[in-house]
Length: 114
Ligand code: DGP
Image (tube, rainbow, N blue to C red; front, side, top):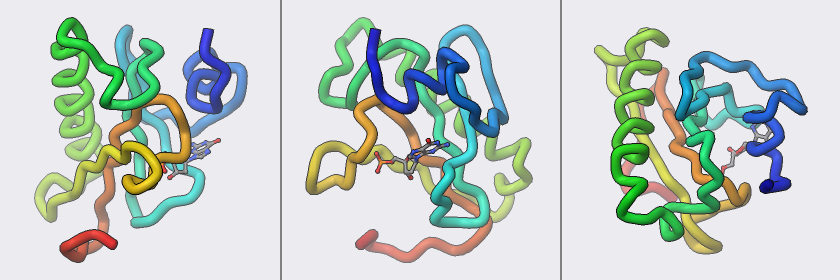
């Protein structure tokens, strides 16, 4: 059983502002938002980071993206657009070792990212 902050949120051991939940995924608001809408979509399965996902996880990975799109519609940012981000490792900016998709919206994003 993983012992990181997102695993504890999934197990409801610590609180989070949950905006979506099903049997495979959970989405909750980031506590350090980088945009007016900043939501994290995570698998309930323990996958530390994208490089540790296996071929058998492909349906789950796709599910995370469709959940992100559904949450974006519910948040009212489908029309203006949004960005989905997965950070991996030190150079990617990963800080929590449980796979998560950042959903960022509510403002225009710059490119390339910093
Ligand atoms: P990353 O740097 O890609 O690993 O993103 C981790 C994000 O998790 C970061 O934007 C801040 C957020 N975060 C860290 N701790 C907590 C927490 O306890 N609750 C919530 N909701 N978000 C957290």
